[in-house]
Length: 302
View 1: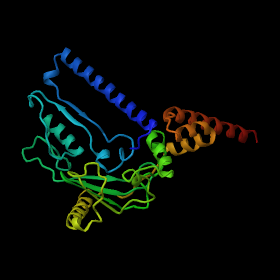
View 2: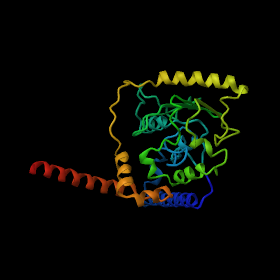
View 3: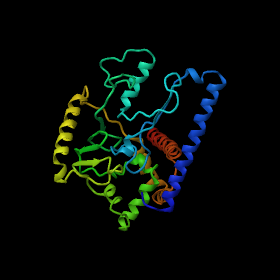
View 4: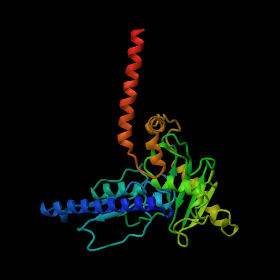
């Protein structure tokens, strides 16, 4: 992330939300204690993705894939306990079934972390169609390596996805800094016009995934092995059907409307101000409905 006042403010607001969330979790635990349920309740704290920011939500870097997974289970764990196994989100579902005494169905890919033989050598992840952005990337992560295969290298990391334009002030600021040549070597790749076909990172030495080793001959064997493993996962996780039914992403129309009807707000967005997607989406829908009604009235008059 670039060091800029707007980006610092954005990060500070994020930390404020984390503090707010922490307080909310505390309220839940207090209620459990007051009702005498604290020692007989399993509480699972998880996230669904990384933060909505550069290389966060929707991306295959660890900043996009890694989520919190904290379990309060007083009947099993006495005091803090850290499990360093590689856990996939699908394993959380299997674990909940296991806790409930339900046999994990054979068709589920997840495994319960309670199983004595529980172990993942890799976690498999994908990035595909998201709203109007047609993507296709695959990744596997081990305790040491991250491998990413970008099947659409022509689609840049910064794809200007309409929905995310409303939620990532740092991206707007860093786009401008990139145009001015003010980003460092670690920050530039996100704004490149294309992506590398393959990425390989040593997570022990490079946890921030800044140094792509895919083109370093010293790691040719590691690259080949992970490439083959990813292809294996591709076959194992093949969808039941390749047919999908895309829908229009509302955010595309909303963003176009903001550019046309509220240019001052759009300029504020480019300056790093969060102008409020939900509010503007409602305004767009109201304006769109009014316009359609006017057109229908004119048609009826004719």
